[in-house]
Image 1: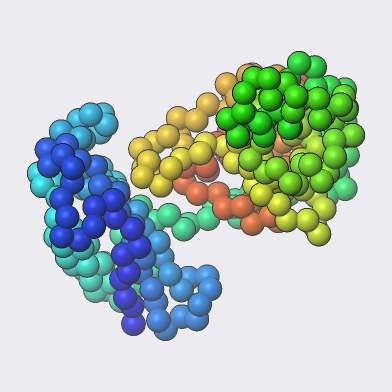
Image 2 (image 1 turned 30 degrees about the horizontal axis):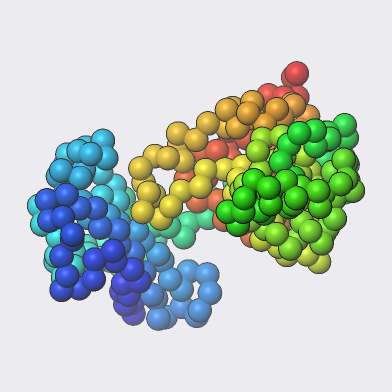
Length: 298
């Protein structure tokens, strides 16, 4: 027994897009399997975008649509819901649940598939990874890079004068001396670091993430900032595939040894930390793996 639940739509039932000729309406739904207990496999989550031909052309996507993008001249919430329900019924008509989900994933985009298990074989013992991080980033100092509290101030839209004052709150010069409390208390600061600041604070965050007693959004933020960040409505556009890991490595000045440590951290977060690896982050994870393996020859 199953049911379909619509979780989100840019344009609600009975409403029309602001521009009837050029619209891209993002929608999400889930299929709930009532014969399975709550937890893994109880639900399957899907994303789609209903797009006008004009908007499809503006996005640079094929005129006849592509996976996750349905082309309609006009938008009707009721029509999309009805069409989707029919597609679901057809997919499950054979009685094979996994085959049905795979079939639906080719029309829509299933967003709850986690590819983290692919990297389980590369998982390192915490002590080994800790030693790798220590060695790889041993000589890294902050230099002129943006500091933790300065990044928080930037995030808060403070003035240049206030940002300079915030910088004074971070007197240490070695990442090993950064306050753990400050790292854990300000998860969003990671996103607002410049390349030098990111390279300086990353080893402190990675090292702290190995403490099994700690769970922090700071670790999640570091994980996310090493991989493509793709908004739900952009899933399926190929942004994840286009993410340039080499550019990220070069911009932040990571050495071959540091790349290996970073890949170890990514595997740790994906497998032990429970951070999902979706289809947009998967290509980047594979490239980090490839660069880590290549670095052994350097």
